[in-house]
Image (cartoon, rainbow, N blue to C red):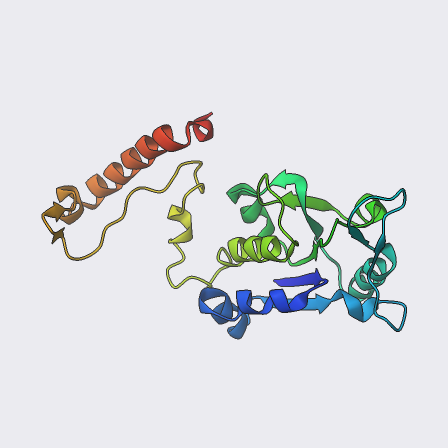
Length: 224
């Protein structure tokens, strides 16, 4: 899988892919992540990528020319399954979307910045818009890192135990059950006896029941 991330502030992205699971996935060539500096596609000496909005108002807007030039350059080298814009008014990111994207080969993620991007980019170049929540960030870089993380961990070979992702929250529209580790008793706080019973089927049944119970309590909307 290849992920190309277009950013006005690429330095914000580097640490997101330099540690832990994502770093290993890239090192093992299970995924290729490229962070592209939008200023490399600016058309003037000042490397300008933003301008004032027509009609006035506060804030700057990312210009259409460098974005178009960047996307055209990328598309000239390969076919992309999705060109995604991280936007507060996009479809809300969930596990189903991550599962879908983990099956594709090439995606572009465009990070907004300042007051957003020229609307013509959204109308003519973007195939999908995704939001990470009902709030506004300073830029789309954090959102792009979140999306990438959620997708990459689903790729075959990324997790040491590939069944781990199948038991994550939201995979089956349920929250994950409680988990415990050693010691089995701490300060008088004991783990449920079922977990050390050795009966695998009973443990799985308990976990499913706890998932349902937790989902009903905390996210009943998921059960609809």
